[in-house]
Amino acid sequence: EAGVAQSPRYKIIEKRQSVAFWCNPISGHATLYWYQQILGQGPKLLIQFQNNGVVDDSQLPKDRFSAERLKGVDSTLKIQPAKLEDSAVYLCASSSQGAGGYEQYFGPGTRLTVT
Amino acid sequence: GENVEQHPSTLSVQEGDSAVIKCTYSDSASNYFPWYKQELGKGPQLIIDIRSNVGEKKDQRIAVTLNKTAKHFSLHITETQPEDSAVYFCAASRSGNQFYFGTGTSLTVIP
Image (tube, rainbow over all chains, first blue to last red; front, side):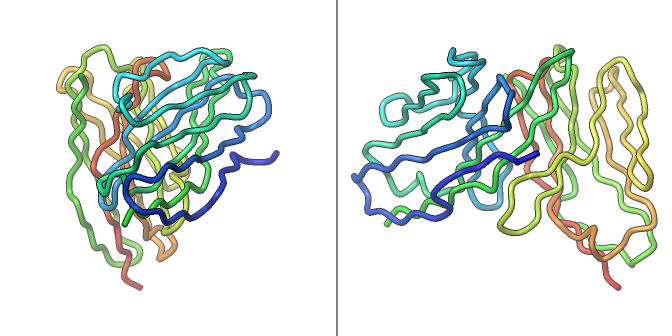
């Protein structure tokens, strides 16, 4: 079974530029999560989708971050405009949440550096 | 919201010894507590989890205990091996929603 795919793996941009990250979850997983992991910290949930609907985006900085999952499969996370403090690893995870299963499976992440 | 605290932040043990990492949480509605191992340059990998209706769970050398009353849970790794060296994260969740992570423990197993 293929795991969660993310691209790109690395991205360097200047502040005030925009950037987008892509995630392809494990096949059949209805739930998709985006996390921000700043160096030396634990992942912080930005947004959670169930199919193509948003379950939780309470910690998403909506003035600059946006995410979509139009067909309930792939998802994109966008930052516009980027700030220096957005430098982090952006992780995507998926879960089947079927029959009460809550296990999350993470992708390798995208490391963003904002200069 | 939920607050998850994790200790210690770093831990060094001799190969073959045991390692214990502890976490506390604040939200009594949290009912799912996973532990993840993260190696350099990789995403977190689920190693064990426990639900609020269970007090202890074991999988080979890894075990997790949960004390709902005190709102704390712990990861126990026995017979540690060099390949156990990594950063470990605890998390708390409400039924697979609203995941909150601890700050991580960097474990070093000395051969």
